[in-house]
Length: 177
Image (cartoon, rainbow, N blue to C red; front, side, top):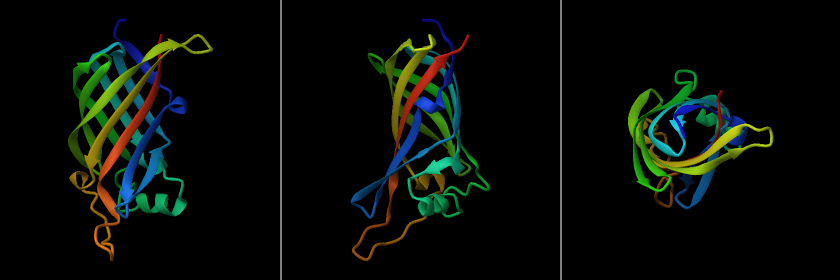
């Protein structure tokens, strides 16, 4: 398959995250609004050009109070940093349909390289005849690396929120004419 442009279908995709809460439970969330430009051969991502932009205000953890707190200066500070971005810089094939995709992630005004493990899930025609491709990508980041240091000590020891945040992306993209 040749390198072509693909549009990410946000209604069939998810950008999710999880972090430990109180050292022993996991809180999950996602971002509901995002855009992406993908120019790639889905069967060979080694030369893929990928740019993601996430609307940080669209954060959703299924708890309105927590979401509102995440939007404040304690965390994302959406007033000053309304987006999270990713731009792929290098992709290495690690197995059949598996890749390590390195890219620059910018959160809270700080840009750091992050490696995502990407798995190409396949392509097919949707019920309307459009060619679609599926991908899964995972990574882990340190909140502190991006200046997100808000936390609280627990009376039993430990902290309220883990430094490590796991990222999980489920992406469906449609081939563009």
